[in-house]
Image 1: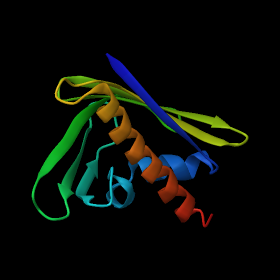
Image 2: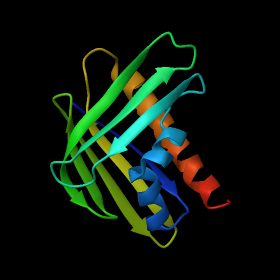
Image 3: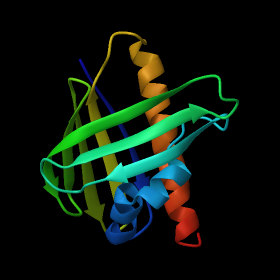
Image 4: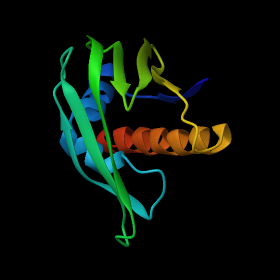
Length: 137
Protein backbone atom coordinates (compact mmCIF):
# COMPACT_ATOMS: atom_id res chain seq x y z
CA UNK A 1 0.00 0.00 0.00
CA UNK A 2 1.16 3.51 -0.82
CA UNK A 3 0.22 6.67 1.10
CA UNK A 4 0.33 10.19 -0.34
CA UNK A 5 0.54 13.47 1.56
CA UNK A 6 0.99 16.93 0.12
CA UNK A 7 1.12 20.64 0.80
CA UNK A 8 1.31 23.75 -1.35
CA UNK A 9 3.73 26.51 -0.39
CA UNK A 10 3.59 30.06 -1.77
CA UNK A 11 7.35 30.26 -2.35
CA UNK A 12 9.76 29.95 -5.26
CA UNK A 13 10.79 26.44 -6.30
CA UNK A 14 14.43 27.26 -5.55
CA UNK A 15 13.62 28.01 -1.90
CA UNK A 16 11.47 24.89 -1.52
CA UNK A 17 14.10 22.64 -3.12
CA UNK A 18 16.90 24.10 -1.00
CA UNK A 19 14.97 23.65 2.25
CA UNK A 20 14.18 20.03 1.33
CA UNK A 21 17.75 19.09 0.36
CA UNK A 22 19.97 21.06 2.76
CA UNK A 23 20.92 19.39 6.07
CA UNK A 24 20.96 22.71 7.97
CA UNK A 25 17.33 23.24 6.94
CA UNK A 26 16.24 19.63 7.49
CA UNK A 27 17.20 19.72 11.18
CA UNK A 28 14.93 22.76 11.60
CA UNK A 29 11.73 21.29 10.15
CA UNK A 30 11.94 17.48 10.31
CA UNK A 31 9.67 16.61 13.25
CA UNK A 32 6.07 15.48 13.54
CA UNK A 33 5.43 17.15 16.92
CA UNK A 34 7.07 19.72 19.21
CA UNK A 35 8.41 17.00 21.55
CA UNK A 36 10.61 15.55 18.76
CA UNK A 37 13.52 16.98 16.83
CA UNK A 38 16.13 16.03 14.26
CA UNK A 39 19.62 16.13 15.72
CA UNK A 40 21.54 15.59 12.49
CA UNK A 41 20.99 15.16 8.78
CA UNK A 42 23.09 14.40 5.71
CA UNK A 43 22.33 14.56 1.99
CA UNK A 44 24.37 13.29 -0.95
CA UNK A 45 22.05 14.57 -3.68
CA UNK A 46 22.80 12.28 -6.62
CA UNK A 47 21.58 8.95 -7.94
CA UNK A 48 23.17 6.36 -5.64
CA UNK A 49 23.78 9.02 -2.98
CA UNK A 50 22.65 8.46 0.58
CA UNK A 51 20.52 10.61 2.87
CA UNK A 52 19.89 10.24 6.57
CA UNK A 53 18.41 12.03 9.54
CA UNK A 54 18.40 11.21 13.23
CA UNK A 55 15.04 11.86 14.89
CA UNK A 56 14.85 11.83 18.68
CA UNK A 57 12.36 12.57 21.41
CA UNK A 58 13.48 15.76 23.15
CA UNK A 59 13.31 13.98 26.52
CA UNK A 60 15.85 11.41 25.26
CA UNK A 61 13.46 8.48 25.71
CA UNK A 62 13.74 7.21 22.13
CA UNK A 63 15.08 7.93 18.68
CA UNK A 64 15.58 6.42 15.27
CA UNK A 65 17.47 6.92 12.03
CA UNK A 66 15.67 7.56 8.76
CA UNK A 67 18.03 6.74 5.90
CA UNK A 68 17.97 5.71 2.29
CA UNK A 69 19.46 6.01 -1.17
CA UNK A 70 18.36 8.22 -4.04
CA UNK A 71 17.39 6.30 -7.17
CA UNK A 72 16.25 9.32 -9.19
CA UNK A 73 17.12 13.02 -8.84
CA UNK A 74 15.60 15.65 -11.13
CA UNK A 75 16.49 19.05 -9.62
CA UNK A 76 13.46 21.19 -8.73
CA UNK A 77 11.11 18.40 -9.89
CA UNK A 78 11.51 14.93 -8.40
CA UNK A 79 13.31 12.80 -5.83
CA UNK A 80 12.84 9.02 -5.72
CA UNK A 81 14.51 6.93 -3.05
CA UNK A 82 14.61 3.55 -1.39
CA UNK A 83 14.62 3.46 2.42
CA UNK A 84 14.41 0.48 4.71
CA UNK A 85 13.21 -1.78 1.87
CA UNK A 86 10.46 0.67 0.96
CA UNK A 87 10.06 3.38 -1.67
CA UNK A 88 9.58 7.15 -1.48
CA UNK A 89 8.68 9.57 -4.28
CA UNK A 90 8.71 13.33 -3.69
CA UNK A 91 7.34 15.46 -6.53
CA UNK A 92 7.82 19.23 -6.59
CA UNK A 93 5.02 20.65 -8.74
CA UNK A 94 5.70 24.29 -9.60
CA UNK A 95 2.82 26.63 -10.48
CA UNK A 96 2.21 30.38 -10.56
CA UNK A 97 0.76 30.20 -7.02
CA UNK A 98 3.58 28.20 -5.45
CA UNK A 99 5.00 24.72 -5.18
CA UNK A 100 3.04 21.60 -4.30
CA UNK A 101 5.23 19.05 -2.54
CA UNK A 102 3.66 15.59 -2.93
CA UNK A 103 5.18 12.66 -1.03
CA UNK A 104 4.14 9.12 -1.87
CA UNK A 105 5.63 6.38 0.26
CA UNK A 106 5.25 2.68 0.72
CA UNK A 107 3.50 2.05 4.04
CA UNK A 108 5.03 -0.05 6.79
CA UNK A 109 3.13 -2.60 8.86
CA UNK A 110 3.85 -1.48 12.44
CA UNK A 111 1.58 1.58 12.48
CA UNK A 112 -1.87 2.10 10.99
CA UNK A 113 -2.38 3.88 7.70
CA UNK A 114 -3.97 6.78 9.60
CA UNK A 115 -1.01 7.10 11.99
CA UNK A 116 1.48 7.05 9.13
CA UNK A 117 -0.50 9.58 7.09
CA UNK A 118 -0.86 11.90 10.10
CA UNK A 119 2.83 11.70 11.02
CA UNK A 120 4.14 12.31 7.50
CA UNK A 121 1.61 15.12 6.97
CA UNK A 122 2.66 16.80 10.24
CA UNK A 123 6.30 16.75 9.12
CA UNK A 124 5.32 18.14 5.73
CA UNK A 125 3.29 20.90 7.42
CA UNK A 126 6.38 21.80 9.51
CA UNK A 127 8.37 21.91 6.28
CA UNK A 128 5.89 24.36 4.73
CA UNK A 129 6.02 26.63 7.81
CA UNK A 130 9.83 26.53 7.73
CA UNK A 131 9.98 27.59 4.07
CA UNK A 132 7.52 30.43 4.68
CA UNK A 133 9.56 31.63 7.68
CA UNK A 134 12.69 31.56 5.54
CA UNK A 135 10.87 33.67 2.95
CA UNK A 136 9.79 36.17 5.61
CA UNK A 137 6.11 35.37 5.14
